[in-house]
Each structure stands twice: as structure tokens, then as C-alpha cells.
Length: 141
Image (cartoon, rainbow, N blue to C red; front, top):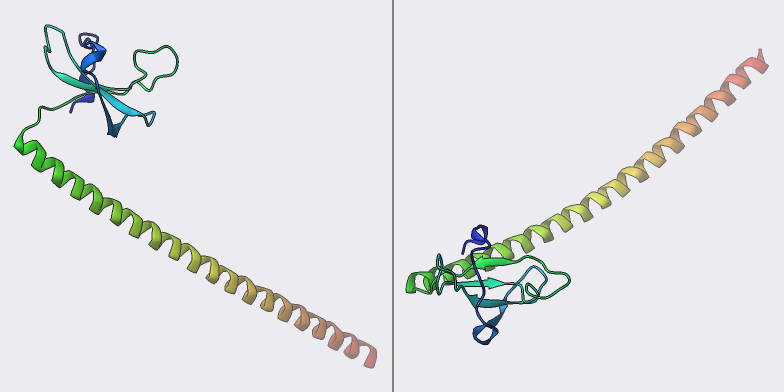
């Protein structure tokens, strides 16, 4: 499929032979519509587009040529779906690992902050003791 081949030389067929493809949504999330080109450069070539492309108002400008179905395309399509499934699983695993790392970092950050507060308190008490000792030394002499 070549979405970059979009040009004004493609014209859509009548609405009678348009089919919707919910499994291939356009950028709007709507089921894309398959049409047939009636141009001299691409006669009979099928393409997919946003169902709102011919309507007034907002459109997503989704458009791509459909490759003719061949046994090779069907096999590749199955491989592509399996690869997409594997990649989706890997992304989910990575997202889970990121969440776990974030939680660990937050826990470690909390521990570090608690230790820091303890050290601040210890430093404060040492300062107070030093001041008291200094004052005792000064007033004793």
C-alpha cells in the first residue's frame, strides 16, 4: 500500500461498489471505505479512504492504494499480524517494567529523604550540644 501516491488523478467510483473496512480504520477512527479508481492512469485500481472524504466538514485526509490480493500478500499479512502481536506484547512488557522501575525509584527516593531528614536532625542536635558545651565552657571560666 502506498499512501504517498495520493494524487488528484485518482477519481472515486460510484458509491454502489464502495465497501467499508472496520478492521482498517481511517485516522478519524471510522471504518475506511474502499473505492475503485476510474482514471486512465489507474483504471480499476482499488484504494482506501476516509468515509468523510467526500463530505463537507472535518476529514482526516486518510488515503492509500490497496495492493492486489495474492497468496504472497496473504502470507505476509499473517506474518505482519503475528509480528504486530509480538511487538505489542513486548511494548506491554516494557511498559510494565518501566512502571516497576518508577515504583522502585519512588520507594528509594522516600528512603533517601527519610535518611536525609534523620541526618538533618542529627546535625541539629550536634549543633545544639556544641552550643551548650561552648556556653558551659565560657560561663565556667
